[in-house]
Length: 245
Image (cartoon, rainbow, N blue to C red; front, side):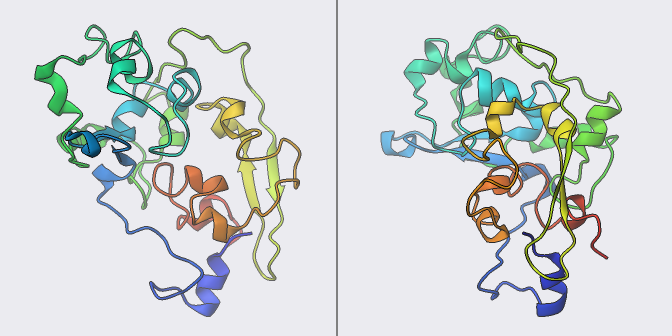
């Protein structure tokens, strides 16, 4: 199901036809997106969005459940008109001109600047957070667990119950000599809603998701929806496959 021992035995490189990791951006740009579904077509620079800036204030659930942003970038049919009408980024409590800057002309360049590194000067604020080698260089799970951050879990739609499902699922690899992967629900439900993953990305029953493979993960499917360019990257192999030496 995953690749690390293959990398050790068969060799990994940019010319490997099976395994291609995205080029690693600087830590302060990891997870940053350019939202450009229609911007440049309409003569406006792409809007920049920094996950690490927003995740300090809001859980993933707020945007990807309550505000109805799809998990994949540039697939949500967001428009400036809807923003101004109080949807998506313009929702009350977000960029409504009260809680944060709004959509008046003086503020346009704060989003529509086409600069993936916009706001990087704030990255030094994370210097006291637990460190990891890859991605942002930040262990966000540990930071949340230690109380170094307290992201808001909802704006209007309060979760129906306290989600505390903590089952740790063992996923046996289908290749010889590859140790199993482990999926911790507890770390994920701390910031996500169950329906962020189920049923659109993963079937609710274990081992019933067809075609789930490392190859497709690395093409942005399944775990790769998040763990490719936003959550910790998949070349941080031991995070999922702790048995790898």
